[in-house]
Length: 358
Image 1 (cartoon, rainbow, N blue to C red):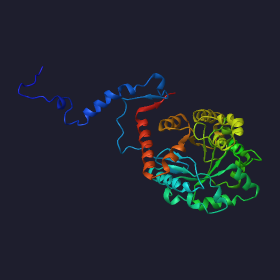
Image 2: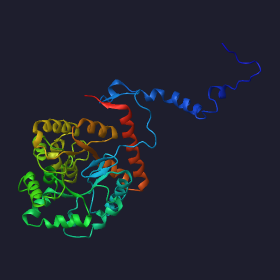
Image 3: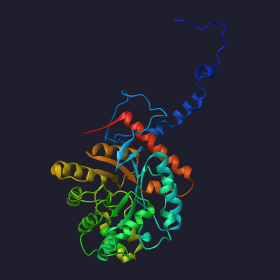
Image 4: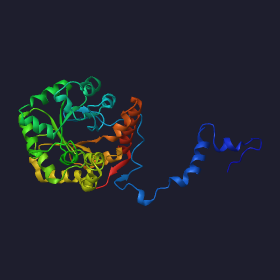
């Protein structure tokens, strides 16, 4: 056993925290002060994953999510900017910031409702983001099922094509929102089932890539089964757990209306439930499945939620977020940039150390 020479002076601080680790003293102090605040109970554990700490090195700054094809274009991050806003002064800044982020990180973007552009170019600049997002990234316009029903009745589907041409969009998102329309004071009333309207649009515009989505309450088994058998580009879950537009409209209504219809806002399906429904339907339908790409959205709060649901789904998929992007896109671009970069790093870290439990 070696001993310290008698002529060597010992500095207790430097000896414990040598110069090659100048942050050690402060770090150890933090560890002591935060030890009791950082305890995780069994009830707090995320039990969706196996954590495998031995099987990979840390990702480096150059590590990224592997590029992949989705809806006919290459993506570098499995993140979709879910349709949110349009037709307002504030929408201009939000949409332009989001488009910049999509270009930088290789994401796809769905615009908010483009209804104003069917009849006027007054708000075109709010939505015209193709130059910002670039031709390589996915950009989809968005119309409600009620507007499409009206256009079909008037034989004016040419307005859809004209709108898409102005936006240089890759396709159209159709949002289906019967409960929102019912609860909205200014809401439209459907005169036929949305499924019939979707089928009519596909027949009228057979070369148009179409995504069908709900608006915050998801879809049940029968609706998903019908959509999977249509030649759609993708289905966007817009499941329960995120922004709920039925509840949003209730908050705009009078107190009596809120009291009467509030239970409707609690109807819906989570993204996790819809993943299992689609998996079962894919197996049941076999060769009858025509729509083979899914955007998992609605209640996807974190990158771990997105990673888990994509790994669970037995189809080509990405995950979408709305409110998180909206929160970070309203001001300077750097705030949004930081948020997306954190999502990217989190996803790469998850791939290194987490596997989904069966």
